Image 1 (cartoon, protein in one colour):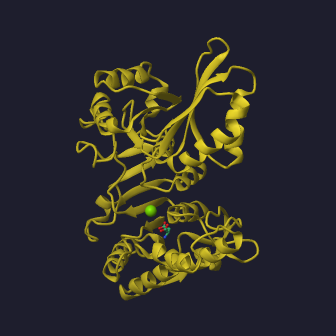
Image 2 (cartoon, helix red, strand yellow):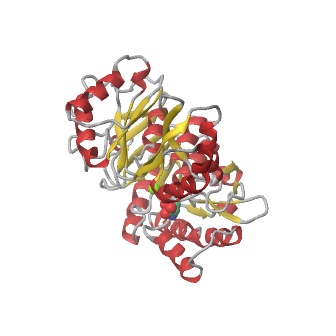
Image 3 (cartoon, helix red, strand yellow):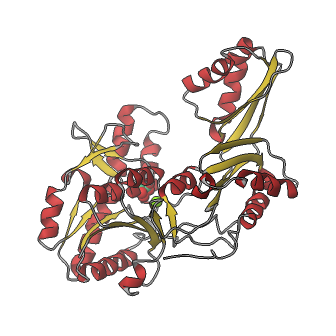
Amino acid sequence: MALIVHKYGGTSMGSTERIRNVAKRVAKWARAGHQMVVVPSAMSGETNRLLGLARELQPEGHSAQLARELDMIASTGEQVSVGLLAIALQAEGLEAVSYAGWQVPIRTDSAYTKARIESIDDIRVRADLAAGKVVVITGFQGIDGEGHITTLGRGGSDTSAVAVAAAMKAAECLIYTDVDGVYTTDPRVVPEARRLQAISFEEMLEMASLGSKVLQIRSVEFAGKYRVPLRVLSSFTPWDIPLAEEAVSGTLITFEEDENMEQAIVSGIAFNRDEAKISLLGVADKPGIAYQILGPVADANIDVDMIIQNVAHDGRTDFSFTVHRNDYARTLELLKSAVQPLTHAAQITGDAKICKVSIVGIGMRSHVGVASRMFRTLSEEGINIQMISTSEIKTSVVIDEKYMELAVRALHKAFGLDAPPAATAA
Ligand code: ASP
Ligand code: MG
């Protein structure tokens, strides 16, 4: 018998019929003798609908006052879900009780619409579990020090579930979703993409931050920090498949030192089209230049991702960086008005039609030549690399967005991800 946390996403909770299915699945686990805590999202589309109502009354603005009310509104989606699921569990003959975040309580800071969990009290939940109840807790929401309702940012139910699992020291946190695991890359781009049986936390963090949207990134950080065993699996399998089969399905997010990792150098290829590149040509090569360019950008709260400064010639150099595409126009404007007069750049240019493609794998730590194989593969396809950045376990390149799919397919093949792994010691 173990304490298990299940998390169900919006599509899994999308109708009363699906909620009944969730209840049957949870009941199967409870009847096998496990103590069950379930954290559902709002029914699919519900959070958007609720926030849309608010925007009808207040189309613009970002005040703290507004953010507080948005959380008050958006958090109700999850409150409906827990009540419905508790009823469905009772209909299955189980004892079940639902709680909103403030009833547990799940304490957060006061950053409305993107609050962070600070602590979770486990006393009430433990008492219910000891009394044989299934406990259903709202995802996404919490309560701050002054008693205001907060939410954790879009997709935040993943983080709620992992935080609850950490606080309860659960044996495993299972994230049931509408895909059946984490893939080597997006199967819509590469049909040969394979589901990974296991991926390390660090790789998952890179994949999530580089555009693979299976889990909210903060939930992965949380799981890594508190060492919560995490599994992503499908809620669209028949609810009555054998528990032993279900328990090892999907993708396990694991720790590097674990034995059952697939022995691949590169585990996955991530990509996104969310960035834009900006270049300042012929800026004076003198101390403080990077600060003169990027200081005003940071002050305007614009996130910079990749940065390149070229070798100088005749006291002049070129400087390029990328920002989120949504910030592209604003950044260009800012550079022309505030930065050009200081740096005397000969020219400021930009390109929003770029994409970032990355290879990710902890094997890169112990193998040389991985990045060069990436560059060779791209050159064989005639793809020009505009920028490069590396970390211990990833290499990213910026290329023209029209070559994105070609690049991802070629890299997927070059790193042997098309073929099933040679040896999986599971
Ligand atoms: N219901 C929230 C959202 O749509 C939280 C979640 O689903 O994880 O973002
Ligand atoms: Mg989600």
